Image 1: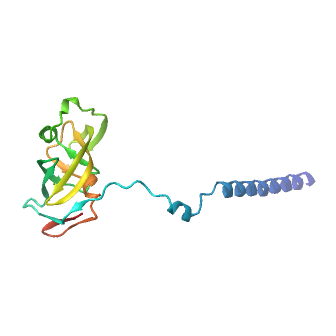
Image 2: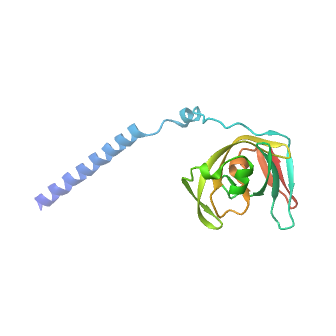
Image 3: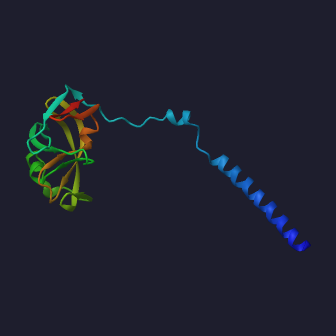
Length: 171
């Protein structure tokens, strides 16, 4: 019985010591206070410029945007669910890109399924005056029927809002 009591006491002391060691270790590993973190600022992408723009809702219920991309016209389906601007091979060609020389190193999920994509940078996209410079985009190798205006453009606006009849873009 004495042996059992001694074993229980040693176990309890070990548990307390282990808990103190963990607490001491966690205190040393704790992140710096929020005030110090708040001073770190990410590199900001260039802001959008120009005037607010309005895109009328189409009879099919979608928002279709006629955009000036690097000085050429591209028709986009506005897609807030697309994380990036996505270009068809045909639109990429019209923009002066040679799809056969691009590196399709990214796997992406499209409405048609898995596809390969090449990352490109567009100098600017302007829709009725709402302009964003240095826009990351992807050329989708196959399976994309129309180019998509995704969040690498939309997310750089100060705001965008959908009404029953229009999509308002605010630089």
